Image 1 (spheres, one colour):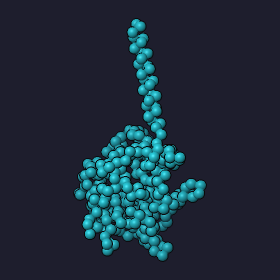
Image 2 (image 1 turned 120 degrees about the horizontal axis):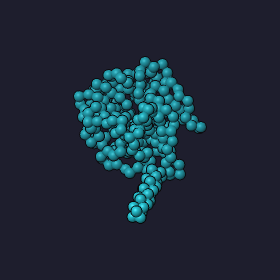
Image 3 (image 1 turned 45 degrees about the vertical axis):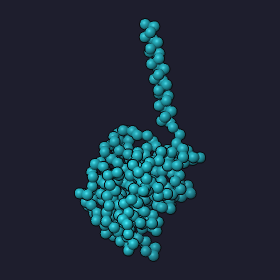
Length: 284
């Protein structure tokens, strides 16, 4: 009887220590660049400062130009609702908070002043982000998932649930032109464009015959004459038989972020050295 009591006591102590250790791990202080995450190499690795969980999946991460804020979207797997969340660096420590419901596929402009939300947007103000605003009638006919702009203000956007190209719209003498289709050999379904700030390349995800799985990431490089090169699959280091998409590149140009989705319980953000893109650039 005494031996049994001792064993139970030891088990309780062990569980208490384990619980405290787990709690300590979960409340780990995040410091340093890139939300305190260990840097990847040429092989993608999970980017999960909140930790991995089957209760939610985190997607579509991007940094502000000063690299002091990291935004991402989260799906609650219990109720299916999406939110927009952020990590903010204060005194070299990252703090997580919820910004509100997700609208569109959020992405920020190269100057950090606008957060695009599909066909809507918010402006950065001295007191925070403005209310949601509309891009106007030129874009109302399109069901846009992601729209983003280059440094000179040219918009690039997709069209949800419709087979078609990525489109663009330039600012000409201060006036927005009607959207036009890019002349690239796109696949059957094309989404979530990422345009380099200088418009030297475009990344998107597509479904078609030239992929490894459900959806793959592709890139097209701008040619010397201003035209766009052929669509190039990012290869089996990035793409798999799952669904890859939602690419962004960090403002410092060093890392490529993307989503990988296998199931609601097995999905998340990945990142990899951006040299994987340069290795695909055709020699001219």
